[in-house]
Image 1 (cartoon, helix red, strand yellow):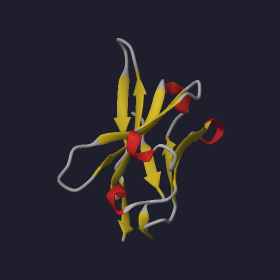
Image 2 (cartoon, rainbow, N blue to C red; image 1 turned 45 degrees about the vertical axis):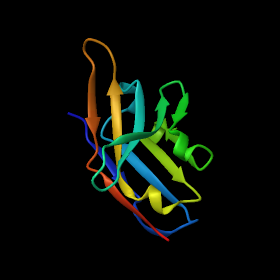
Image 3 (spheres, rainbow, N blue to C red; image 1 turned 180 degrees about the vertical axis):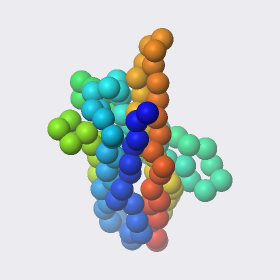
Image 4 (spheres, rainbow, N blue to C red; image 1 turned 180 degrees about the horizontal axis):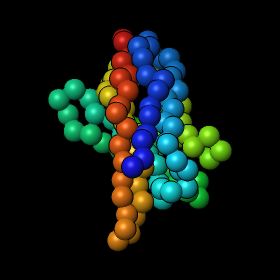
Length: 118
């Protein structure tokens, strides 16, 4: 069993910045990819950003140029730097780790609330 623990959420004004952290209870090399998802109130959970073991990244169109995902393998931590925040970025942000294949698995964090005021 792996635990993913998010931190760094909070309340920020539009145009501000936040950095989310996701720390895993074991090496993040055990995942092929780690990502951040978000779920606004009353809506579905969608992918925000993804980073692979090799360092490749992928972003939702709505956050390109504003958000940056990165990883610190030594700290078993993945970050999401969020700049130029907008009210529509308000959501619960979840960390996710995925191992693909027939013996694959995935884990979710408990979520952290991000609220952007106008």
